[in-house]
Image (cartoon, rainbow, N blue to C red; front, side):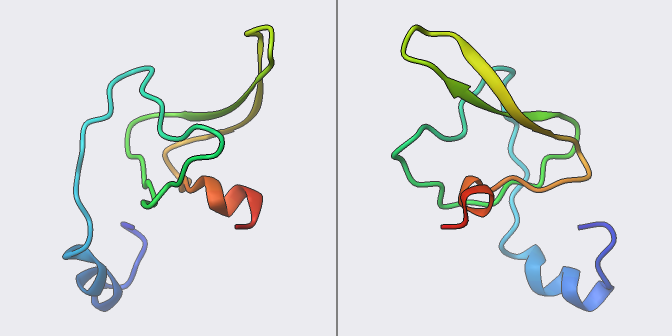
Length: 76
């Protein structure tokens, strides 16, 4: 968002809210809906696949220069 031109930032600013997200917070679970887009500022967000036996595999990691919207990852 810091890279946006001032006019674009001003247009979006009223729709942006800074929220603390605790370590380990789940932003989305399979089958749910993600009504927000996350521009995380001081974190790394992981997209994990959890197997039936409870094991997990990291699919991707997004740093603070990225954007998180699960529907964006899966094309929905």
